Amino acid sequence: MDRSEAEKLVSEDCRQYLDNIVDMLNAPFFRDNGMEAVRISLEEVEVRKKVVPSDRNSNGFWHGGIIYGVMDHAFAILTNIEGHAVGQNSNVNFYRPGRGDIISVKARFVNVSRSLYHVYVEAFDGEKLVASGISTAFRLQEVHS
Image 1 (cartoon, rainbow, N blue to C red):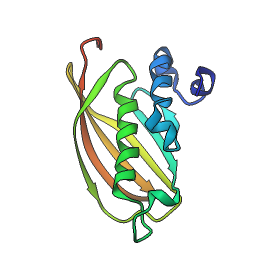
Image 2 (image 1 turned 180 degrees about the vertical axis):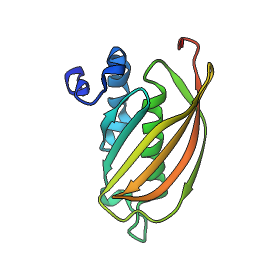
Image 3 (image 1 turned 45 degrees about the vertical axis):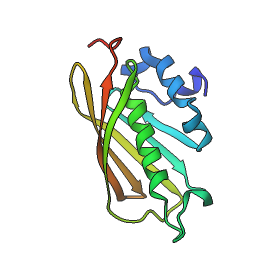
Image 4 (image 1 turned 30 degrees about the horizontal axis):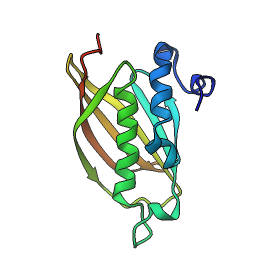
C-alpha cells in the first residue's frame, strides 16, 4: 500500500504519522494474510480480513489463531502510529465460533502512559462479538508525548 491509498483510511489527527502507518500496512503478516485496514485514527483502528478455507478449523469455524492474528495486528497498528512499540502480553476471551466470511476487528486505547499502552480489542462476525481482550505494549524510548 502506498501513501496515497493510506491517506484515504486515516483521520486527520494521525496524518503526520503516515509513514509509520504505511509501514504497518505493508508488514508481510498483514499483507500476506489478506488483512485490510478500514479506518485508522489516533484512538481506534479497524481492520478486516476475508476468511479463506485455510483460516477455518476442522469444524468449519474460524481458527482461534487467525482470529488472534487479526486482533494482534490491529493492536500493533494502533500502538505503532506515533512510534515504535512492542507487545508484552494479551489476554483474549473467545465467546462463540466465527462462521461468516469476514473477520472484523476494532482496537482502541484503554490507557496510555509514558511507557505502556493498554488496548481493548474486539473481533466480530457481522454484529456478533466472537472474541475480545486486552493487550499491552511497551512504548519504546523514541516515542514522546
